[in-house]
Image 1: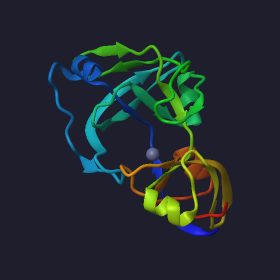
Image 2 (image 1 turned 90 degrees about the horizontal axis):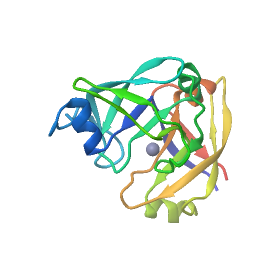
Image 3 (image 1 turned 45 degrees about the horizontal axis):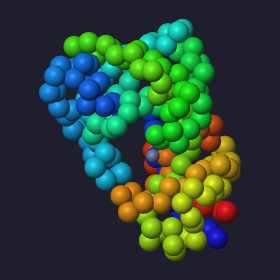
Image 4 (image 1 turned 180 degrees about the vertical axis):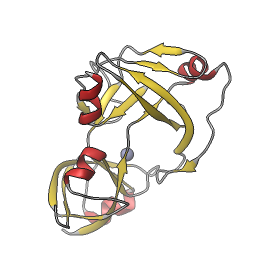
Amino acid sequence: MSHKVTIEGSGKHCHVTRETLDVLFGKGFELEVKKMLSQPGQFATPQKVTVVGPKGKTTLSIIGPCRKADQIELSLTDARALGLDCPIRESGDLAGSPGVTLIGDAGEVTTKEGAIIAKRHLHITPEDAASFGIKDKQNIKLRVGGERGLIFDEVVARVSPDYATYVHIDYDEMNAAALSGTPEGEIIG
Ligand SMILES: [Zn+2]
């Protein structure tokens, strides 16, 4: 099995609930669309928040639309700088992850949980999954080339008709392989 996929690097960002957005930016505030992202319906916004951990703080962009839970996605480097011990998790699997304080233009919210290192993943349509022979939740191997070429193991495939086929890794992982832009990788198993 050998199939090419496009890789996107995800910078640190957060997803927020409607209730959290009301507190951070004022009741009824609507996230603005800066740029539509590769996954259908998801968009980058110009809205930024400060995230505060035990050892530091940093600025995060909000990705829209609002979700059912606040979720803060950091790289291991970001998490260490903030003094957070974040688990490596799939999106939405937040139980036992640390909470943080988010500060917006209008107020602040301290979350009970929600700060994670996103597990590297492949979003894939059912059509591509069938043609590649990949099942939902399967861990695949992805090879990237170049001067620091390497094989990423433990890339979890998530199959849904709501997705477009892309691999998402964070900037620690992009940098480990000296990747930039939206490079291609090869699924090798
Ligand atoms: Zn993703």
